[in-house]
Amino acid sequence: MKKLNIFYCFKCAICLCIVSAILICISGCAGAGETASEVRDRHKTVVKSGLRMVQDDVDAFLLIDRPTKLSDKLTR
Image 1 (cartoon, rainbow, N blue to C red):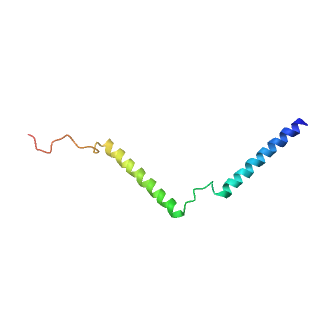
Image 2: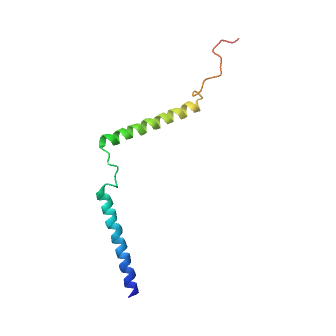
Image 3: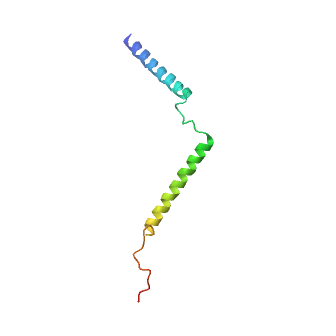
């Protein structure tokens, strides 16, 4: 009888998890609720930011991200 009771509790717990997941999805907590244009704008911002960071890395590698210590005067 005890094994049947444990199985029944496990079955109830699984059903409770499934019902909870369905209720969360229906209530709207699963998604951000963004429109297609908001998603597109967010993606554009992320890509722009990523490209800016790549450009900064290239500038740092080529040492053009800071002023040069070379003189602008002609030396002989």
